[in-house]
Image 1 (cartoon, one colour):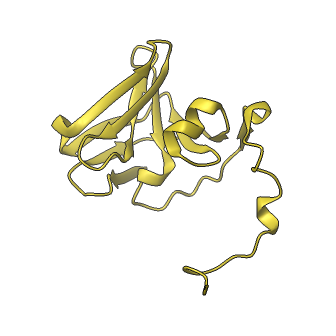
Image 2 (cartoon, one colour):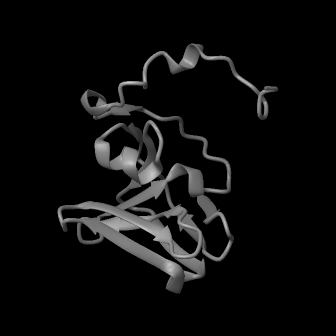
Length: 134
């Protein structure tokens, strides 16, 4: 399986070859800060290979207090990008940066004890195809 991905500005592009073993929605405080949203949506693989196609020099890595919460991002547009953790043993890929179709569905929500107070019953809110009329 091959997946292609990119950042928002298109300066950074990449390819991932291999399978993802896990797909989780993380509600921890750090992931909420990383995304500015209710949760991060990350794919995980212990065997897939990451290949930068363009813009690798624009990829910046932030390791929160050197304790393992790692975020890679485009230095131009700030988009989240894949990173390799645990001494090269784990590829972590933000699902939103994948441009190709992901067949895998999230397997669950993690760190729910830390979820935002407003992150309840979101599935019952109205849904719009674009911006609602105001």
